[in-house]
Image (cartoon, rainbow, N blue to C red; front, side, top):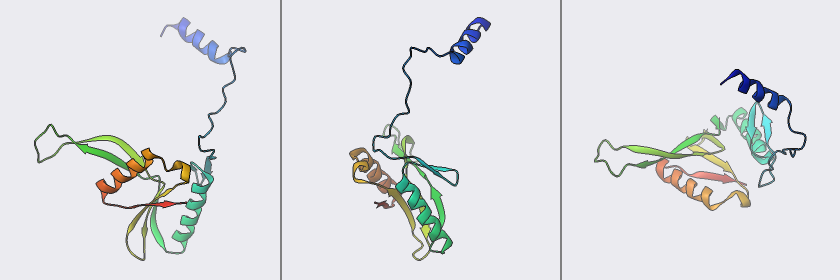
Length: 142
């Protein structure tokens, strides 16, 4: 980048056009408020409250290995190759809200905090995909 262009770019950043409209933060389409607890950002107050409930269960010895926002790769096999070994392609990700181990049963629990508007068709499809691929059940918490 030339010195002149860099100087003009910096000047434009320092002197915004007063005629330009003010940019407002984009509102959440579900009217949820982001909340930060323990340095972790949650998409809603309900999700943050559930995190605090789970923290109490950890302290009470009911659950362990609490993980916030665990990611699950959505993978499909490459049908153009002969297997084994099979070749898989990651086509996206599903991020649940929480994952933990229930110490009474030993089961791994995956949770998603959902309201009626957030149970979209896209969410339902991703949930079914993850449940089939990973042989788990995603628990929806209201």
